[in-house]
Image (tube, rainbow, N blue to C red; front, side):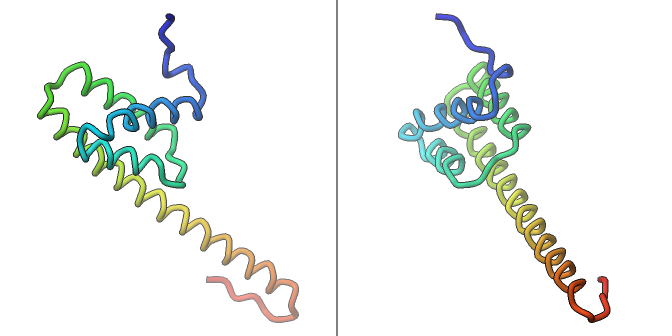
Length: 117
């Protein structure tokens, strides 16, 4: 069987691969279950962060022993939670900006003066 080069995959297949790693390991330790749950949420992780997870998975698999793996995966879970929070804040800010733009556009239809800021 030929091995597939992760970096040539499209986003959906990369996500499937990374999710499958943690899905298969989730019963082994709570940290893997946490990572699996984080990746199962209804948020779209950016591809650069997905690639970072893949690189971390390979780094951990290639170089560390069991206790070290758990510690690294715990740190990775924390990092992923932070990324998720930052992306959620960004999406909320973008949504608020759209609402403000809609209000501004709607106010242009009125005969009222426009106040920016």
